[in-house]
Image 1: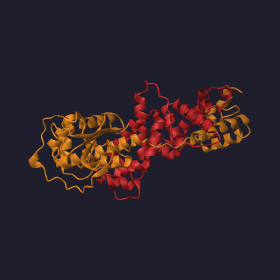
Image 2: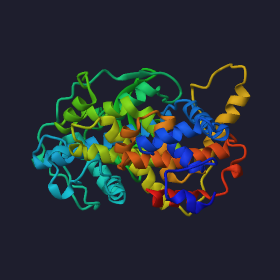
Image 3: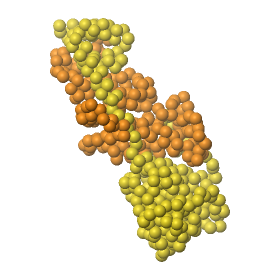
Image 4: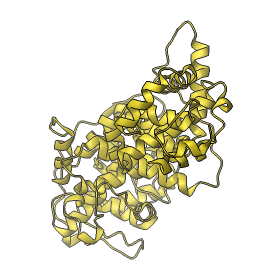
Length: 272
Length: 202
C-alpha cells in the first residue's frame, strides 16, 4: 500500500503511526474518526500494545507522589506577601484610601485580561527599591510612628513629626518568653513574629535606626518586631532579611539599644 | 486573624476589600499543589521558588482581574504556570539542573521500594526531556490530575491543544520509559509525513 492510497480516505492501517494512536488515546480525533479507528485497532495486536504503553506511561505519571512545599520557600513567600501588605499600608495611609491596591489601583497599573502576569522585572525593581537602605530604615521608622515616608531611595527625606498622628494603640500580645543561649524560634513563633510590629522600647524611630546601624544593619528593614523575654530578661527581637533566600536574621537587643549602643543579646539565623 | 471564610472566592473578595490576611490564607490553602506544579515545570528548586513568589505577588496585586466565573485555583495555577514558562524561556540557553524530588509521602516500606524510586527518578528525568509546552500539559493533566478543560484554562490554550500536547508528550515519555520497546517498528512512514497525510486527507 502506498502513501498515495491513504491520502484519499480516513486513516488506514495497520501499521498506524504512533502519533495517530496517541491522538486516539488522548481524545484528539473527532468522534467518527475515533470510533472507526478504535474498531480497526481492536483487531491489531501491535496497535493495542502501543495503547497499553501509553496507559502505562499515564500510570507512571499519576503515581508520582504529591509534593509538599518546603518550609523555607513557604516562609519566604509569606514574608514577601507580608511585605506587599506593608507597602500597601504605607501607600494607602498617605493616599487616604482604605482598600488594597488590587481593588483601587489606577487603570494604568492594572493588567487587562484574565490572569495576566505582571511585569516581573518591574515588580522586582519595586521590591528592590523598598529594600533600599535609606528608604528601608526610614520606612521602618515611619511604620512605628504612623508617619508615611515615600520610598524615594534617598536619605534626604525626613519624617514630619508634626504630621504624625498618635501611634496606633497596639493590642499587644504579651512578650514571647524564650529560653537559651540565643534566640531560636519554632516555625509558628517565627510566623507570628514575622508580621508583628511590636517595637516596644525601640518605638522612637531615631532610636530604632541608631540601634540597627549600631548592629551593623546596612540594608533592609525589620520584617517583624516582637517584644520577648530571653531567660526572663526583656528584649526586642527584630527579624531582618539575611540576604539569602529563605534565611532571616534574628537580631535580639536590649531596651537600651540605640545610636552607638548595640546592646546585642543574641544574633542568630532562621531558615536556610 | 481573618475570620474563617468558606470559599476561595470569599478570600479573594476579602483581599480586594482590604483584609490584609486574606491572601496569605489563600496561599496557605493551595501552596503545596502550586509548589508541585512550579517545581515539576521548572525542574529547579530555586527557580521554582522564585517563579512561585513572583506569581503570588502578581496574583496579590492583580486579584481584581480575577473573574468570578472561573475557579480561583485555576486562576492561581495559570499565573504560576505563566511565571514558570516565562522563566524557562528566559533561561533556554542554560542547562537543566537534575531534580531530586523529596516528599514526606514516600512510602516507608514497600516490597519494591528501590524499584519504585528508580521508576520515579526515571519518570522525573523523562519529564525533564520534554519541551516545556508538553511538560506543562502533562504535569497538569497526568501528574496533578486536572481535567483537560481546567488545564486549558490554566495554560490559556484550547482544549484540543492540551490533548495534542499530551499526546505528543506521552509518546516521547513512553519511549523514554521503555514502554514502547520497539518504536522503530512503527510503520515505515515517519510520524510527520503521516500527520501531513492525515491533514490532507480531511
